[in-house]
Length: 294
Image 1 (cartoon, rainbow, N blue to C red):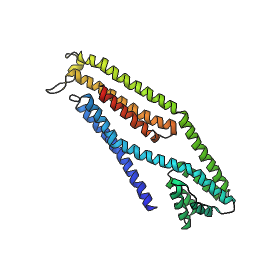
Image 2: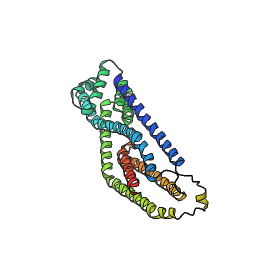
Image 3: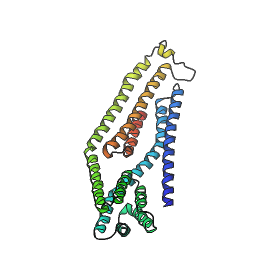
Image 4: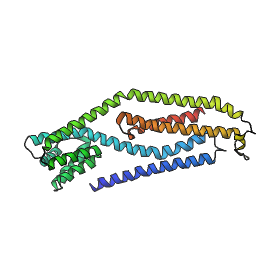
């Protein structure tokens, strides 16, 4: 159990380390972009922004998504485990023995956590604490909250087996609702991707056909042009103004890509991190659009 807790702590440290580095990387990228706006071209601006996402944000999202999927896969098996325990209790076995006997069954990804629960009960660990440790090992805050209710009911003399059966039914119902919501909102996610592609296409077309033309017509004596000094080897004032607008477009697009990806995950699975694959895909689409078509 100590090794398992150590692994969890290491994963948590790595996860938040990558998150901190990704935020720091974006801040550094923004600093470099706005301090070197006079010499940067579109490709470099794009690269400066996408590198922190690839190097730091993707690992953070991958670790977080793995954790979410691991908990979800375990929660799918929890109702069957609870039903088996209840059936054993109703046949005349006490609840502690029923849990210990359940180790003989096969629960896939939940086997290790059930074995730990059984071992703790065998070592004399308090039943209530063992249940809470089980919820911690599964990694579900909702399960821990529900098991606290089971513990409270047991303390006041309630029928634990009936509560566990209701809990099993509740978890099963929630899983079915999540799957139904994911299925029903799949078309909305597809529509969201189409809308994002249209937005990206409009940004590229407007920049290439409108801003580039306007940049070429910038009057060197204008107030805007004069406010941006030029030095030898730097881009012209018109190109620098174009770079400024392009940087704002790229920032807006990446922001929309990240927020939209998380929103898709929230809509489908009621979890922001579940949108990690959408975030990565939308960011990649944005990078390709600006790198090859600007």
